Amino acid sequence: MHITAVLKEARMAEVRAGTFPDDDQSYGVDDREHEKFLGLVQKRRHA
Image 1 (cartoon, rainbow, N blue to C red):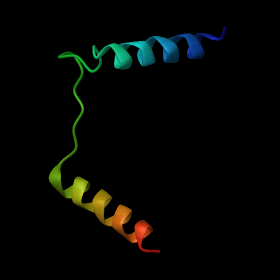
Image 2 (image 1 turned 90 degrees about the horizontal axis):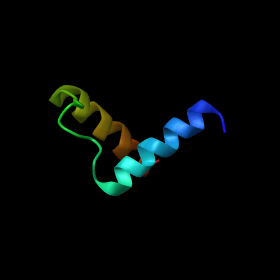
Image 3 (image 1 turned 180 degrees about the vertical axis):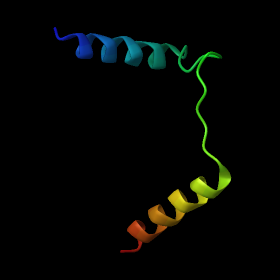
Image 4 (image 1 turned 90 degrees about the vertical axis):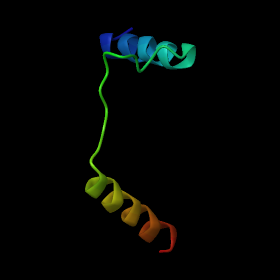
C-alpha cells in the first residue's frame, strides 16, 4: 500500500474514533472569508 493511502487510512480511523482533530490541531477561518464561502454556496444552490 502506498504511504499516502496508509496515512489517509490512519487519519480516517482517527476521525471515526473521534480523536481527530485534537487540541494540537488548529483550524479556522475569519468571518469575512466564511461569509464569502457561504455566498458562493448559495449562488451554486440557486444556479
